[in-house]
Length: 245
Image 1 (cartoon, one colour):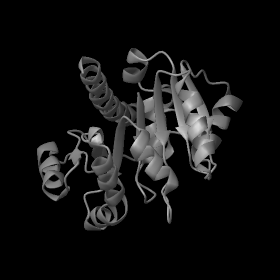
Image 2: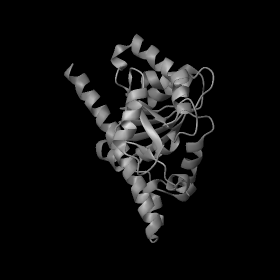
Image 3: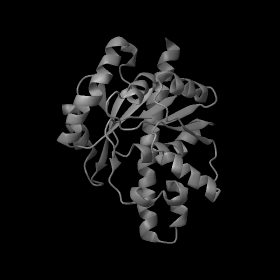
């Protein structure tokens, strides 16, 4: 299964989501080999992974791959090679300007496409102007892609009502795109957990003696596990449906 975090604008939490879903207990429970793939030439995740290697952290069944080429054939062949050796692929797609080659590829190739989006008119307008036309073209050309595109509300207030947030997006989202019934809350821990190559679970061990910090990171881990479990269940249901056909 391939899960892609896609958004044409930056700063929506794609990299943080990708790296922690890859290391989530939900992912390791269902998949033995997991590939975390970054297509961003800036290499945010690559730098983080290099720090992990320097610190000697164990990666379990997770491997990392960085493909920065903008040549269609190069990254297509790279992804195909990675899929041959891994059960789950988590892709971090860069925010892109003109062309949006990686975005188009991810929307067409992924089994589950996750669109992190703030509850704001600016994010909604950017989505409708830049990303939705790509999704609409893909669904029209390949109707089987219907149901693969999901908005994940991000940076929500930790105490915000899920039903209210979901109702908002259900009202504003166009056809072919649904809103996940989970959110990625705004938490300070997401800004500093990954120093020295840490993931959330490893950061929890570092701050275990500090009750305040430990509780904060435990809540963040719950966020990620809920998101990961939601995405995996969507993908597994689609796989089961395809097998029945």
